[in-house]
Length: 285
Image (cartoon, rainbow, N blue to C red; front, side, top):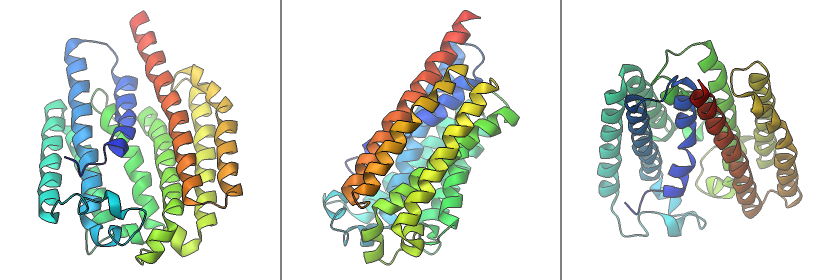
């Protein structure tokens, strides 16, 4: 279990939860049990995704000075041990999703498929510019729909809100690639940042983050998400300030890590407000 990146796994639990809350309709014991299954399944699924990525890229990770100490190899674990754990977590996640419904099961399976395209040896689209971001765009949308589909058919509202998460997820991917530019260059992994430049990857991420804020305010204005989220516009200057700070620092590894911490806090605030406002409206019915 020490090979699981629990910080990264926990950071990605909000998206399907928000999807479930926005579509749940009523707070009943059966519905709350389904939410628990969705979250438990998502914990296992995201842990699988990161483990599979680590399993596939271990040769490069041990050569990266910023990653080597945190690899499962440095902890005395074998590749086969981590592989079996990744497969077990995937099987458990799909079982939990199947207990919720057919659509969550197939959405979870699709996310696992995107993960395989991104990380699997022989495919490894992580090293294919543009396509790697397309996988994150699709994965971000599906991650929201994983929770949304537990209580509602996938409709226009669900697709529009999923686009917000798709933009955020893809923007974060661009930032992550800019952060890992040196290690990926060392290992010959042709990410967007390696192919087009670290600064270009950073600005692409900032542009998508900006688009996500604009979209969120628009969704709130039209009532597709709680209207209080129009106030998310007030968080954008904080995000922009943190981005400019990283740019002034030369987009160093440390400055981009600080940027990631900042926008994760901002999006956590957005997520909490979304859940609280939606649950409050359901309680008032």
